[in-house]
Amino acid sequence: MEIKIEYRPSYALAIVGLGMNESIVAEGGAMVSMSSNVAIQTSRSAAGGGGLLKGLKRAVLGGESFFMNTYTAQGGAGEVTLAPTLPGDITVLPMTGPAMMIQGTSYLASTPGISLDTKWGGMKTLLGGEGLFMLKASGQGQVIVNSFGAIHEIPVNGPYIVDSGHIVAFEETLTFEVKRVGSWKATILSGEGLVTLFNGKGRLWIQSRNPRAFGHAVGSKLPPRES
Image (cartoon, rainbow, N blue to C red; front, top):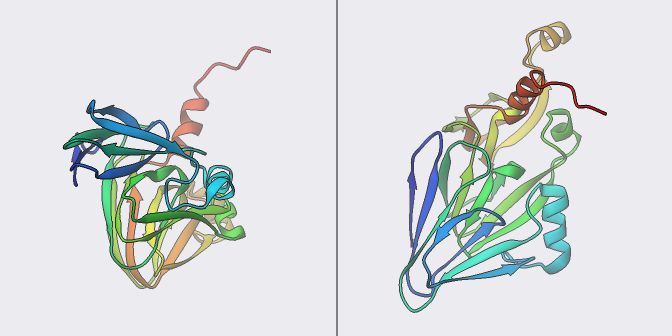
């Protein structure tokens, strides 16, 4: 399997080259195009199994589609192209070690050896504006994630602070807590709100734009909805 990312970072497209009988699992609605010999199978449990309840938990708690699609090249090599809903970047995260925590809407696709589940993040993730649950990817293989804006990788070794709305993914070796950016006055007046403090040693991926902040900025310019 060969995964190439084109048109980065604004309108990235993942081009997945499949050998005969090779498969890629993708979020529902992510497919842009595919070879005519690529078969598609839709399942509630394509990424890691678990059946109805696991698929429902990913959808309701993790912010992902209830259904996952598996694309398999039959009778020869094939190709699938994938893209997210929002304009932005795509990157491939090779997984050979620790599990990966992924912000719910950043998951795009993965190889069959990757299992997806949801993980309780505690009240601290709710305070950070990212919801109570994140997706946990584990196993051996590759995970394709997307962002709003460009993706930037940071090797963390010790304390490191990130605006919560800019988190894409991080290795589970990192611990985190949501806290104020400074005093309550600084938190309210600086426009930064609450931030996430990471600690430990591991890789962290952030996005250069914040979809929540962008939504607020655009929403404020729209005319009021008629009743």
